[in-house]
Image (tube, rainbow over all chains, first blue to last red; front, side):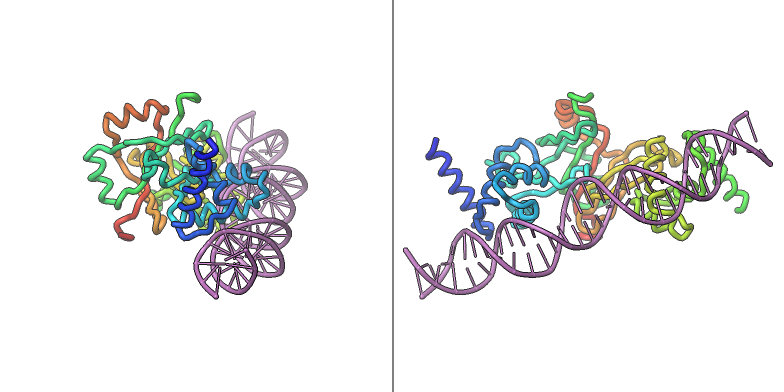
Length: 144
Length: 144
DNA sequence: TCCCTATTGCAATAGAGTTGCATTTGCGTA
DNA sequence: TACGCAAATGCAACTCTATTGCAATAGGGA
């Protein structure tokens, strides 16, 4: 267990350094948090969590943005005027860009896999440009 | 022409009153503006336009929100932390909810028709809830 | 035309996010 | 292992979008 922890810590540090950034406590804690999350976290969710460690919200914000720019995180806005961040590389599963479902009632965000458009819609969308992200909104089953 | 204008004015006034609101100059001007728009307008776009008429931005905002609540407008956030409004009923074409395409480079918003998900994706999405809105993001053809 | 209440203008405020700057701290190097 | 410097941090002030309180104004039904 201890060993496990230590390995995780080292791999996180390595990932940060490989991105060209310094492995500071705030950044390590941020990545640990995101590693354990099942959906993207907002800036304030991360900030609240790291406040106990004495990390300033401005630092959290800079780190999230910097790590997103460095390619460690993905930053998106899902329609509620708040930025959300998720790990780019998380064992592959949700590593690549994937669609999100946002409940317009409770605000819950879910990560989806494998949402595809029909061939006709794909063609139609080409008229506008190259699609890089799909976002679905609606009423989730809990609120439905 | 004059006749045409007058008819349009009356139908706008009527629409506002039918929604249970008073047909004030600010609201009429807002609807006229949105009627002539080809894509959703932001609050500040509308406010800038109506400023010449001496309309306060708070009023513009309240009107946009009120008319959205009343069902005259649709209010959405397309990923750039700004609310956008469009007519709900515009001769039918873009009257019902429809997908939007947002260019992540230049911010341009386009209204799309007829984007559909594959049957498999539809089924998958049911696990999360009832989809009411689709948003696509990517690089528009102008930005390459 | 009159009156009631919806609406407006103005100013103050809320909340998310950003920035300037002096201080601290990773971490490559000697 | 100690050193030094650029990167990172904390703190406070600030920006931008959106919202609200309140007194004054004006639709529009009676």
